Length: 159
Image 1 (cartoon, rainbow, N blue to C red):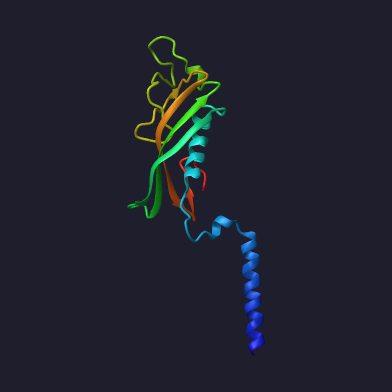
Image 2 (cartoon, rainbow, N blue to C red):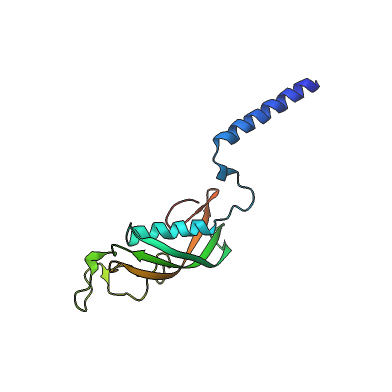
């Protein structure tokens, strides 16, 4: 009888081992699974390249504060990072929006004092012109929402 139980245990451990070997490591995260500062930087980088220019270079990225969120009413957890970043735009960005006079071109903003990628209530919705070679400082934030066993960033990707 003991050998029968031992064989079942060995088979169960073998199946568990095979399953573990074919499953991504993040799926087994039990401790310290929250998004990391590197994830926040990746979200920022993805949004910069999408919203401004694919050749932009992040020269500085510093997390100033972060904390977990209890997203009341939504039934899931969140995580929020605040950061400052300096980004160089060697080719500029949104060159079609280069100002010509006082009026902004359709779909463009003349605002050159504030840039954001993720703060929805303060985001400039229209494209912003950035001259080639300019370095822009961002004081921004990004949020991750717990979804399907992972964390969804504001760039739409899972971390």
